[in-house]
Length: 267
Image 1 (cartoon, one colour):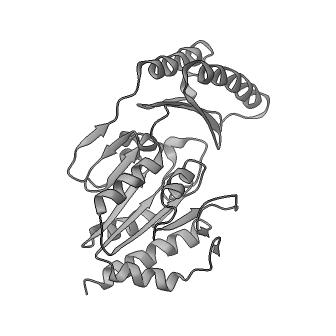
Image 2: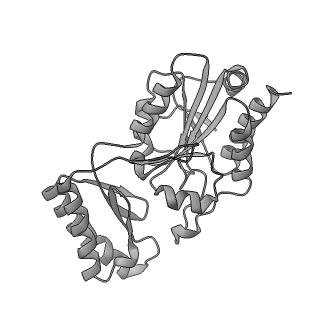
């Protein structure tokens, strides 16, 4: 564990969690709650993570929110989430609320054409099995490839996706093991801002846990607030987070302390 901004105190933070009128724990999934694996369909949470999140979510005035690049359907499947767990998917383009409602924000026609072109290209190149399609993005994963084949896929994908991004206005995003074309206009920061606005004024405890560049949008959205921004990653990188935790041990201990703090208010 390492503080990256002002020297903090986790005892003070969890005392705030204990005494708050409401508590919101927001977290990314891949790379944060679950390790990266070659087959993303097998990216299960670290042992114990799902149980502690469900304990937190079951407490009065306590809320867990998953904000992920995955689709809502994929995220709920991979974690077997309970129906009352809020999930923001596709980097903020989808929202599944605890009441069961599912909202998807619309994208422009020009962006849709760019995404469709990327899928058509991958089909011609026999790379469709590596494509992940979402409401507002198309990603190509090469993590499971190896050697010269991996380098070939990276090279042709970089070239083609860069051209499509330039012509369509889509954003080009690099992530661990792949490349993504993303519709501009929404990101994880938008999701966090909406959650904060809905909380309104009051005595709230708020934290965001994330690992990669997409989580920096959320960290930036929380700049100047009382929220704790936590980077969960095996190696430190440049970040806007306040605190760095290494997974899984330090991250799980953080979640356990949150659960202990919320549970103490009901005893």
